[in-house]
Image (tube, rainbow, N blue to C red; front, side, top):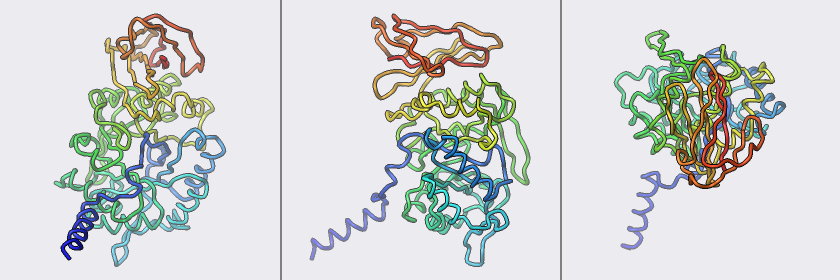
Length: 397
C-alpha cells in the first residue's frame, strides 16, 4: 500500500512540475529560420498573401536554404466569442486559421502565429491576458508550431511571470510550440527567459536603416520604439553567454531587402545576424525581391555559420572605432569571422589567430564565404579591404 502511494505521489510531482514535456526540449536546437509578415505588411495581412508567400518558399528555394516557419503577425484576430475563444478575421482569412496551417504543413513548412501578454495586442486586437490556457489550447488544435508573444498593453504586469504563465499553458496544451518572447529587452530577459522561451527579443523593434537612433511612434495608448540595425548590434555585446541550443538572443527580424539599405549594408546585416546566432526571420516582401536580395538570404555557407550545431553566439573581439572584428566558434573547431567597416570609406581590417581563439603559431586556411572561394593558407594573421558600410566574412580552419 505504501509503495503504491509513493509511486502515485512521484507521478503527480512529475506531471505537476511539467518535467515531462515530450518534444519541447528538442525545439529550436539551432536558431529558428522563417518569414514573418510584420516588417513589410504590418496589420495589412490576409490569407492570399500568406499562401502566395508559401509558394515562394518552395519555388525560389527558401525552404531548401533552411527557412521553415511562416509566421502571421498582428492583425489576424478580431474578437472573442461568448465563451472567450479567440476569433480570426473571416474577411481576411476566410478559410480559417486551421486550414491555413494545414496548407502550410502540406508544403513541408511550419506555421507561426502572434499574440500578446497584455489585454490587447500592439495593433489593438484582443490579447491573451486572462485567456492564456484557452488560447494555448486553441493554437495547439490549429496546429501552430511557433508563437510570437508581444508586450503591449501590459501595464504593471511582471514580464517573467506573464511569460512563464503562457509557457506553462503551451506545455499543458501538449503541442510543442516554439515560444518567441517579444518583450523588447526592457526587463533583461536574457537573465530569466532561457528557462521560459526559445528566443527573446533583446531590443526595441528594428527598422531598415543603417544607424538611426531610437524613434517613437504612437499607436493608440501605446508608444512603439524603433531602432536601426547597427544600434541593435551594439546592444548584443556581452549577451553571448546566455545563448545556446534551444534558447537564443533575438535582435529582431531581418530587414534585408527593406527600406533604403544598400547591397553592402544588406550583406553586413545578414552576416552579422548569422555570426550572432540570431534567429533568421525574413521581414521583406519575398514575392517581389531582387535577385541580389535572394542571393544574400540564401547563401548556404553563411547560413551554415548561423545554424552551426555547437550553438555559440559570436562576439566582438576587436573594436577600433568604426572598424570591428566579430568571431564565432564552430563545432568543427574552426572560426567564422566578420570584419565590419562602419566608416564612409573602404578600410583594411585584419585580425590575428590569437584574437579568435586559435593557436598563433599555426597556419590556417581562410575561405571567403561571400565569394565562396578558398584564399589559401595564412601564417598568424589575415587582413582584407572592407567596403564602406560592409563586411568581409571568412571561415578560418
